[in-house]
Length: 316
Ligand code: AKB
Image 1: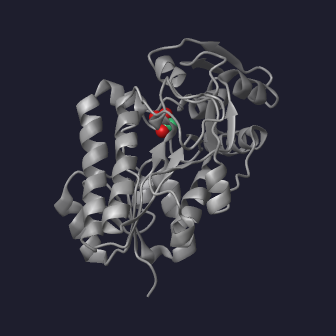
Image 2: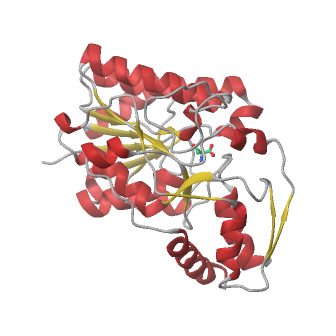
């Protein structure tokens, strides 16, 4: 009969593209999209869609039982910038949703779980250059705290209850289909939209703020690859460092100017600068490359070409 997959948070930036890709691999009827509201009409109308409240155990369980789900991708989360505005809401959403899914796996309602962690697990005391897998982790954002604690719980559920949970520490993800919401790396998506619509972008980070980034196609590939990998190749059950490229706002602006010479950028750093300052500049992901053969494909130039091409079609 094949695997039955539930994507929780399917209306979001990564959840939506992951759903499309999973459907193209496993077939529409094997991939159920779900979210707390009908906020993304494209995903809602693209196949089976259910309203699921990730904070409500019964709501998640009902959907899992209804469709005989065996694999859950838990993509619902409050990101770093919004989390600083609503600390308790971020804690409640990010932790309760994870516990519900882990407990459903522990109780054998489901067999496999994907849960995204983030570079936000690192903090100001972490080495910022080629940040290793195992290092000092003192996150200074609520989002980062939830991800770090979540990683510990994933490893605990794997070791104590044999839960097959797999996780990646995503960098900033760049995509053109669905906008990100409430992250510190969101500038790297907004800048392309504004380059097309206004030929101008007012950036909320300083020009030399280097952060780890990745194109959506690479992020979705990594997610599906780690889930497809044989269980005994997944040696890390907290979360894997995952890297592709690193760049600054100035680097992106220059790569856009190669295509749109009249594009201009201004820098007005806000509270998100402090968050970015606490994160690594680049990441050492050698465990992922070794254990399950992770390899990225997209460079900054590839990303700029694809983003401008797709957004030009969208806006013009
Ligand atoms: C954010 O900026 O909060 C996210 C992340 C790096 O996890 N994109």
